[in-house]
Length: 116
Image 1 (tube, helix red, strand yellow):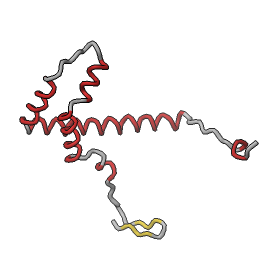
Image 2: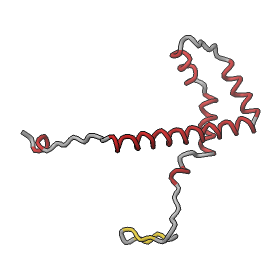
Image 3: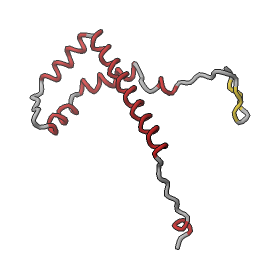
Image 4: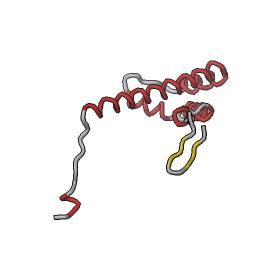
């Protein structure tokens, strides 16, 4: 028997660990999605020429609401929509807001001083 096999531990999440993590994932996902949609809507509202170009691209396809796989494939081929979403996320990055932190008081960690 291998040493590693003999000392394998299985970790099971307890309910008091699971519930807060599920809540965090739901809130974080909701917040980033709603923020991204708000920026996309803002750009569409303030730039009608972009809105018109997107409408034109969407209307050139024959949408089949009865076949979700075909509609999904069509949606994945909307190149201007893809470029639009990527550009808005570049202009208004959603995740950077969650990463930025500010030090409230001067702190020393592992010999490194972080100023307020």
